[in-house]
Length: 277
Image 1 (cartoon, one colour):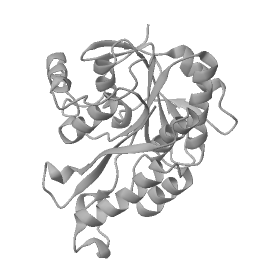
Image 2 (tube, rainbow, N blue to C red):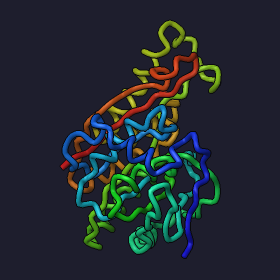
Image 3 (tube, rainbow, N blue to C red):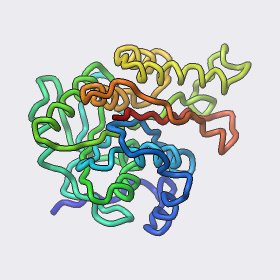
């Protein structure tokens, strides 16, 4: 059996099972019905956006047999990156992978969808996986990192088509942070200087609204042209899966930035969205 192990330092998410269960057990988490077929979650450390992750993962439909987590940090034209192995060793225990479903998805991919195995530390999938394991302990997982180009929308469609063909009940989380602003990121356009937070919010909401309205091309264009998302492919694929599953209308749960918790001239935008039955 091939087991995936932790690659991120402890600051990204708790290493202790009791701490994770206490975190997601707080009464302001997991409110609302659990009927979302897909969601968009940020992927910074739990200190900054764990609440938003929990709101998204906690709303995924309760009968999901497999939770698919889609990450990013893949530029346009780059390969898809699969997370393989039989299980992931997480603080709550071993979390099994749906290898059968994952292999069927990849078998359905057309030419030009090069897929390679993940061999590096990347937060976009791993930081969400302990949340999924704790909140959906009876489910399996599958995960890929998705390039930020037009193939992302087709990948979401293939997820839906494969799930239907298999009779597999799945829920999808697309992982992206939004605008990275300030001197730490080398991004401070002159027009933003008056009110950086409001300027960033406007650009972030343009991107989020494109997702909510099902405009894949516009979302990808905004992410590339305005630097308003670091993993737009993951978000577009989740949106496309929802639409292909009969849930085209998304809902914004929350918007925030890292400076809400840690005031700084450098900060990152976060958004939480769901598509519900």
